[in-house]
Amino acid sequence: MNPAESRNFARFGGKIREVSNADPNSPLVPRGLAQAAAYAWRILAVGALAFVVLSVLGQLELVVVSLFVGLIIAAILGPVVKAFRKVMPQGLAVTLGIITLLAVLAAIVAFIATSVSGQWESLAAQFGDGVGDIQRWLEGPPFNIQSGDFSVWFDNARQWVLDNRGNLAAGAVGSAGRVLEIVAVIALAIFSAVCFLGGGSGIWHWALGALPQPTRARVDGAGHVAWRSFAGYTRGIIIVAACNAIFVCVLLLVLGVPLALPLSLIVFFGTFIPLIGAPVAMFIAVIVALAAKGPIIALIVLLGIALLGQLEGHVLQPLVMSKAVNIHPLAVALSVAAGTILAGLFGAVIAVPVVSVCYGVAKFWHQTKPADDPAAPLDPQDETEPVLSPQ
Image (cartoon, rainbow, N blue to C red; front, side, top):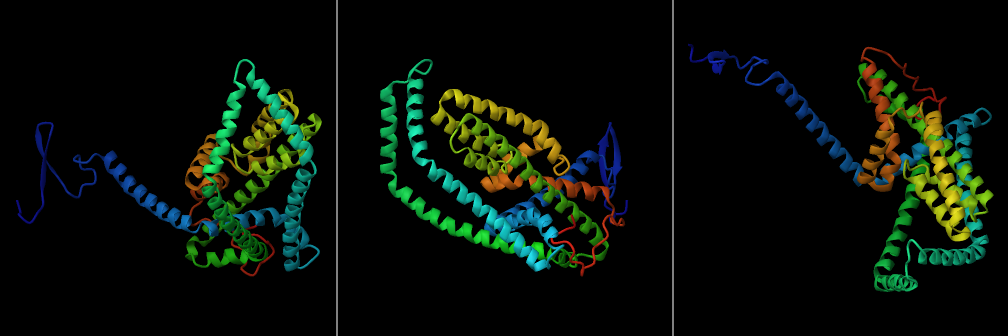
């Protein structure tokens, strides 16, 4: 044997066989194990990259939130601005669309504040009577809570506030700083939305210009799919939220529960947090009904909310969201849970649209080939669409 040659021998079934180092199908390493190892290190590399990206995005939380809110505003106002552009210049259409949105939000806040202040005295009296009824109800069977226990609980709560007034004051100061951050986020989000609405196609073509020419058309098609998924989810969740709010408002008005309109608006905004937002907001309505109208009305409100949950899950979501978000309910639940763990409330809000966009892009990417031309690139000078991608 030539000593320059590298030869290995192994025993198989009682016989000695020569095994080549270059043989990819070497019995020393089963083929399945070799393939699993190849996939494993690639998965680890991708996971490490994802961890680094998420860490960087975590450090840029305010910027990420601002861009996300700006995309939401662009998705909502895209059709409105498109309609305005039929009768006015683009810049004026974008300005008028932003002013309209801000006016609607300001009107909602003013309406809630006016409604609460106008009914505060009567609501406080109703709450006092309702709390007394609840206390007497808890004193009877099956709870049999002693009246002295309530006094102990109230005293403990008051003492806790006194003992922690320093921490509460520090928290208030921190909340004031948080308010400034929220103002900065809103300002940056509005600026981003103006850029997206006014020149979104130009931004997108500028980004495509950094890519190699063979992959540009494929990435352009994936971007179209991503934007359609995101915009469809945003508009679909608004429709679902509006239906929930109208149902709750009618139910509370019929039952004579105070603050029906403000509570329905809370339900509207709570619907934007999938699975948990609307139930929490509706639970607030049940508490108000319990304190103001007693347990019977509260039970009726609770049953109505349960009925609304069935209508949303079996009618509204499949009818409105099926085309925009084609993912399984289990994926929705897991996405919301993971988003909440990773990024708190903001993560819960963005989890479902992010997963739906990723699913749509992955499906499109798998079904197309680099040589295909699934979506012809737009002319860089074409500014007919006010958002990032064509509707």
